[in-house]
Image (tube, rainbow, N blue to C red):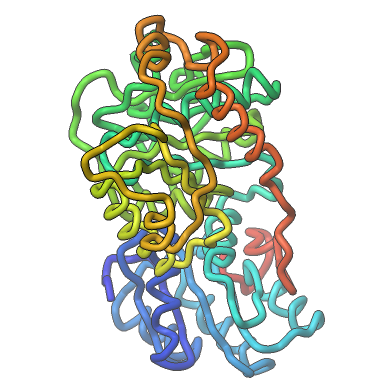
Length: 398
């Protein structure tokens, strides 16, 4: 249990504790405050420990009407804006409506999809009720596997080949090269937000952060100079994505090869996570470790896809395709051919591989982009509330 965590999970039994760990990770925190009991017990816990909580998940089991008094007790000790979701066995529209009237953000019938629960907690904290954008995260399994190049070319393909308004956010705060690879100059970029998180996101800030490459493709660059990594809170990433969703069809997150709470949080917003790997020992080892962590924290396995970069390259530690899939327990979705000549030419020209001309590699980037175009599907849950915590309501959590 992390005393400083703003996440509180109220469980029926200790056997449900993995739910708390998964939810905290998806929200971007290393741990959660856990109470085994009822909402009354949790209210007492908050008061006794003088906790400041932002996110509450209340598991009620078969309890029903008695939960209303628990919610009132929690409302008494929680700060305005606290997001609360409830999970229980009851599938009753009248009960659902009663919870929403009490200010509950969302209701899920058990068994619960923890990833959907985390998205509900994060999404409605902004007041946003629509989301037509597709968020795609790219990460290398091992340093040098090339996820940034894949993210850049897929982003370009979505923008140019499929005429979709696209933005690439270079989240590799210390060593990001996306803007430089396109010969773009950007004095601001992502550091404008991450170094001043309390400022809030408005049109002026976005204008300073974004640099255009063509009519459909924009970039938010990493800092030009080496800087210490700031402490990134998940709410900052959430607010940025919500602001960008108003303008862009596709939001590409080029994530660094690190593991941290904010990376986990970024995954919770993603409609697809592309793990870029190579068929060599170091990459398969890291792939297996990362995939296991992602599964443990509750990432939907249907959102994860593996792309083998530099396919066909011969390494001393070469790993067979079947062995990679067996060790990592996941099928490989994409193979990107090894074409060093084209890659070097593109880098020297400050262009994407697709712009250099026709090649097998360019064709595979376009195919990968094509497979991601229709990712966005409506979320179907037995019950879901989207008008929670109205500031004009009485006796509500926020």
